[in-house]
Length: 501
Image (tube, rainbow, N blue to C red; front, side):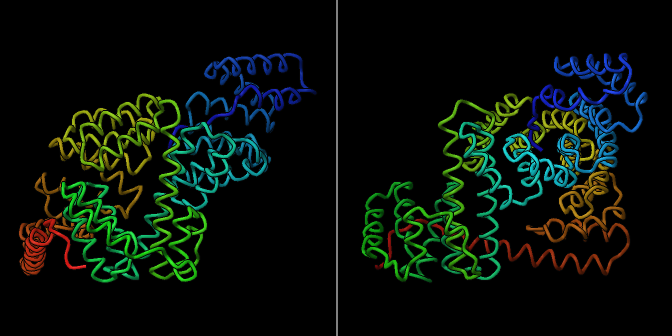
């Protein structure tokens, strides 16, 4: 999770603590006031023992139990905070401060699913509180509930247009929604002109111009009147130094004329900037998914563009890192992620992205040191345990790697990358038999046949010759098909002059 937005503790206490001990002794009131002063001064560790003694002296007092939980949270003791705040909510389930800080504690522990319920209660009770609303949005985002998260971030952007985190998260929500829409298109119309044009767009962003050229040409072959494709081809020609060919394609785009908005209503809506309207389309046709995908892409670009208008921030460096990575400038991406990580106060989520960027430049030593610190913050994160295990495996430490990969799979048994990495660790230790179930589990992500080959070898080593032969045959089929595909692509993706109009 990203850094947790916190409300000023002293404001909560002034409204919440003073009446608690009205009927109690003056000594307890004095202790309560002193604890409140410590909290207001940021001395959370010193406040904890005082609240513990107050809770013991006044059993069942919801306010004191809640304050103890909040003190634990503010001091960074999230597990202890959860214990106390859950106790408070058993006594008073709708208690707003207890729900609010329980949600914060769960977010800090990397457990957004548990944070949602408490944060929803707090957000409903505090509709104008940007902190409560922001943390609910963060939890929704972490759970990939992007549509709901986007709605929350939209409200936050209207309330505070100078918050870079809001714009960045909103942009990421729209990017994710665009991907979801494309995935639906791919299910119902793979290889269609719509699908080809969108894939070509993504290749342009990755500077894979030859591939983009081929895909745009294929899209036009299936739908010569698909608007925007000739213009996109013109841009590819310009980027590859063929300005004369670019002019030809631009002229062909212009020859299509203006769209008839009575018929081409989605095209017209897109040209007029009605992106939210297109994003809200309910149909399930290829055309609708095409325009929804493009609309979400535009909404993402618009949201992220606000970052460039704001002062330097972690979010700005995250955006620059992503751009560098998309253009395969991986060392530059590492630098930007490092700046984002430092500016964010060593945020765990940004740290994960920095680790992945370090993987791209094969710097596993720095990645290991980084991930060690991140795991201390979120020991129950399946992703962090997987990344750390993968790093140790890359550093030729398979035994240590296996430990963390096993932990990751205990937390997330369906993680195919973790199964694959654990299999590699077992193979490196010469434990082929233990590797077999994990290799089998990882077969769906075997894009080049390597896992099939390793499974065949593992079957051989364990004496299962028939299974080994069958798996080796599958590997050979995959390998041969891949070689043929690569040869075909090499022949197809040369950028050539425009064909007949």
